[in-house]
Image (cartoon, rainbow, N blue to C red; front, side):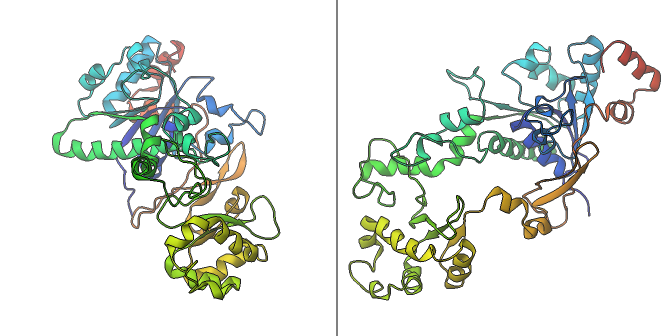
Length: 413
């Protein structure tokens, strides 16, 4: 079995989260990802949120698997020569610097394209062209400017960001798709092109159903939202709490023993109404005209879920799952990160993997969520800072030992 991206070489100029997410995914698929870092410093996340002194943080290690690391001073003249040589032998350059950073280094797109007409230049930015195009963006800023925060949380509370990294990691995934499309396009044209993903745009794409609801709102209240029928709808899509966001109402209801994550999410679909009522002991409501159709239930969804919760509070979330799934009632336990990281089934599928690091020891991380039948993923530990400098200079760029020593004396590597 061969790796899906075997033979593709990536020049990784990324740092923190959005860019490394993209290049790690490409590395998992078999691309040779060469991460360029500053000597003695490296990616800022190597030292951020450390739990073990003087050891690369989990923040770094969990975003940089399967990569090679070289140290290079791209402001040094000889360092620029090495960088140009890298450009000539790589298929893709990926960066998430502040706007214009590579231009200021002396490598605008026009020059990069001239050096290697086939290279794909991929960038993560905060915003697309417009009044904010030069602004820096971080995870929560992207969630706020992309529409997510305004529609997350409960109606009587403030805008809320989500724990899922939809700004950084979400945009990294979008960028990877763009790179793959550009690689396919290059097969027929021989030419590389620019690929750009703005974090605001990526979050907006993930908020697509809220754009749907904004336009539905012009024609009346959103009946599946908890504000209906007693709350007020303004001119913009409101925060919807735990409402399902789809055509079928859902809510998180409590289970025993009553801890912070002892909840199960239950969805009420018309075919499941009778099953639910039998299970919770309310058979009389199955054919009751005040309860039997979605239309009459919508104004009193709070009462529906309160009844269901009286039953779920007598069960654990897993017992609820075991009871309702055979009845085709959609439901799912609220799983904590602690539960997920220790789930043996996820370990068997490679969604959670254990990695051994020479300084850190063993740790668990999320593996490749995308499974290919003929191109399995192996998750390899992240590189130590500059671990592969000599290897890349020799094997990839063709420098000999004396030339490498000259580069070192000049402070280029």
